[in-house]
Image (cartoon, rainbow, N blue to C red):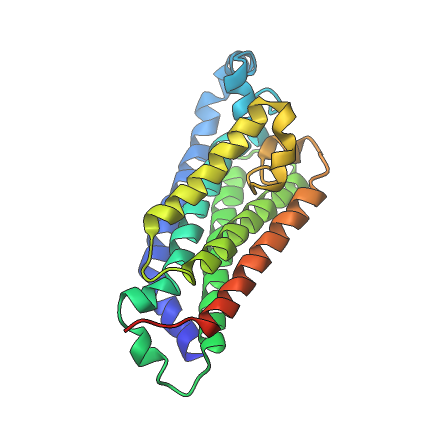
Length: 261
């Protein structure tokens, strides 16, 4: 597990920064809720009546004046978008980074197969994504308890599980893309994550585009749909399959790739 440990050490600084920023912002947002609660009723009615803007962010379905609606809108977007960027950027550098940094020549001379090297890198990515989500879950739920609010904990756990699955899917896809590149392309990683996020917004604005929900993980990780009790099993299963296929492709491709010096 040498490569696994090395990747965890190499990614520790970035992981710490992303986790601290995302978890801290979530805690701050929840902490602001009591001071804003008195005016939430008027704000909720206002946001729900803003046409396409309301639909884009699910404000026509979420009750923004409740802790669940507020959490899904504010904290969910912070963890959803921030976690997606973290997963995409981290995954994109795992395989391409070895070739771009000219460290592959050293790594691949050791008595360990390429597939094992890639698999340990993938395992490290999975651990970091899950750890980030667990810490952010603790920050979010701990903050709710700290301000004395009651939440629908079952729906909240489903929401966080969907966000974690979304990030794992994006990570798996970017891991597969990384195996095709000669050097890390962080612009591509951020563009992919942002594109999937905005595709989710576009789907919210036009019900006729809902079949595209099977393309973007932001569809099944949408707080408005989860809290409304919609059945998102199909899109989530497809998203899981896409993530696994991306990761599997990365393992297969890296094992057969012609590594440039």
